Amino acid sequence: MNNFTNTQKEIIKLKEKKDATILAHNYQIPQIQEISDFVGDSFELSKIATEVYNSVVVFCGVHFMAESAKILSPQKKVILPDERAGCPLADMATPDQVRKMKERYPNAKVVAYVNTSADVKAESDICCTSSNAVEVVNSLDTDEVIFLPDQNLANYVSQFTDKDIIPWNGYCISHSRVTIEEVNKTREFHPNTPIIVHPECPKEVKDKADYIMGTGGMVKFAKETDYSKVIIGTEEGLLHRLRRENPGKEFYLLSPSFFCSNMKKITLQGLLSSLKNLSPEVNVPEKTRSKAYQTLEKMLNN
Ligand code: CIZ
Image 1 (cartoon, rainbow, N blue to C red):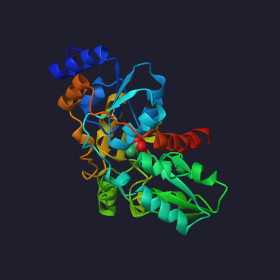
Image 2: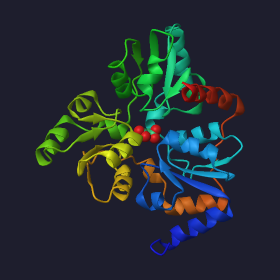
Image 3: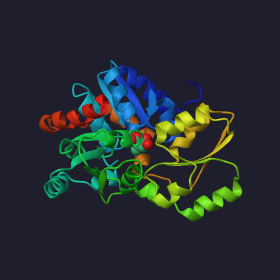
Image 4: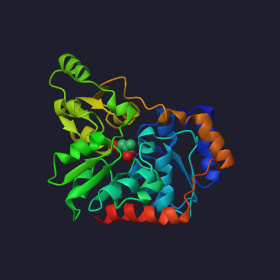
């Protein structure tokens, strides 16, 4: 507690008073990760939100993540400290577009990556995360799958299934900027060091990497590996967690382009003010929520 700033101390006190749990995504700034009750990927955190007893959940992440927490825990008050923290990838699929695609491919099932709005989840058959996408697609009793919204994750999945994957044209701005030249240069500077990239990276970069996994997989790999040095190809916020949990190991970022400006909209001051006012609150209309809940539940029971 002594090493915390005054604002951090104030947040810690206030969260007790307001009966709140603070959840921080792996991409959040270090000062927020340090004072959060849990740090994790979006789905892990939404599940934790269902398990905690607090009546208020403050989700330090982006909008679709707070929505997922609300979908799974409708009785709790879910706060997103800055309502401008959106996800351009999630915005690349709208419910109207999904309905049109379903009309065009009536025999296809729709798999929605968790990085989608509640409205899009409600129009889909099942959800997936970056770690279970292949499993989810292969479990479906259909030959055609509309996979949205990330084209790079869709392409990755298509390498591990016989099903016909109908991709969407969405992409994550931060993950799609990394280049093969950056991979080649990193290999030159750090020979014999594993390079791990997120499946949202472009195919040519994934083809050159040693491992492909989501942030949950990277956290596990970092803990278990015998390598003392690892190159990380995902949003830079994860490096803080990896370094904190693995003090004897070194972690380097594959490219400076792995920076999500939306994640960084959550600040200590914003978090403090949202706790004081218990706003901005994230709500999902019940009709949408119950449909979206079914797509998430199907993934959980898969
Ligand atoms: O769903 C998440 O948490 C994201 C955005 C990435 C990941 O791989 O954990």
